Length: 510
Image (cartoon, rainbow, N blue to C red):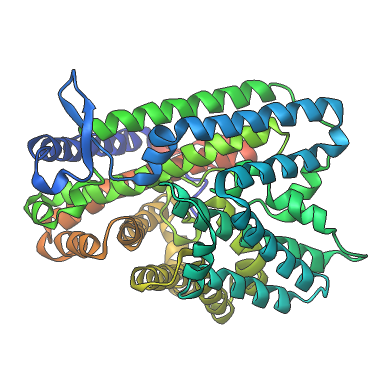
């Protein structure tokens, strides 16, 4: 209810102004804290020399970002450019065999990068899950897949397998766990899709070609086997109108995102500051709120850029890869919260939707979310922080359903119908604003630390009450209403209806 209702324009302008002022104000506090503490002893490990001519150091706390766009940038570019060249040549010369070229090139790249023992280890995982897949039993596929995943996430099995990989370089640990983890999830997708195949089985070569597609191999995103198999074996390689223009535009946007993040890292040390709890304790409530929010925004930008670069290569291969995650600013419900759309699509298809159905029954939804976050916990690697993160996000997802069920009962549903759509949207916006900060607090602990999340929670909920608490919620409410307005306009574009003015200069879609 309320999605078709437009609020008055002056109200939306007011929300925009309040949100802009608040973001600038919080940003100025973080900038001041970054500048005054650039030479702090606790910053030495993560704040490195940057723009010498501007006298700015750089926040280098995120190893993954530094790896992608600084340390190993040339290696990654070399591998991806080689893939694009070979894929393009064989797409023109032998389009029927291009999926084979994907697998061969990817396998050779993995062999050169990680050695034959790692390649043999990944192939052994493929053989195990393929052997189980031919029985076409979903529970056996899940059991085998989860046991294999546990073998690289739990001691002592993961250390034993990691020791098989010879050689030593800075990226080896990341590539080992990333390559094995994503490989096992893809093998599980293959096995589960094979169970759905009515006649015969997919071949082992189909699994190898799917699993060793280089752009997705080490860092994802995961594309389910049914989609990849259909698209990679499509021989009608015809571009849609303006498709290359759209791919080029997205590539330039990703480049722009990289440059923007680089600028921010020189002026706002949003990743390093939360690691120094003594400094965090001295910051204002607004600075803490801005830090927590900016950390989630950065994680979304990182995912969007990194997956965007990979997706650009995949689109050049005539694939339709999983899209980047939804921006954290646009999220105010747990049901849409994710930072890896590929993993999210995998979990929804094989676990969450499979068990939960249409997600309107409380007990089925509870079982679906528990199973989903159990698999997610294993995927992330079981530890205290992951347990806490999984519990609170699982609770948040279920609590939303409980609240929706409660407010759908009379007399609350009758009262909401009587108050009108515009007022209903405003009241829902208040609940959504509180929910937004629950999402932030539940997820920032996995990005920074449990201590930082507890500090933000105490300051915004208890010590900062009522001034800080209510002012942050007010700003968040303004942002939620702007997001709801954007969603309303998109909904009308997808399903246009006549819009006519109503009293007071408002617009309402009937």
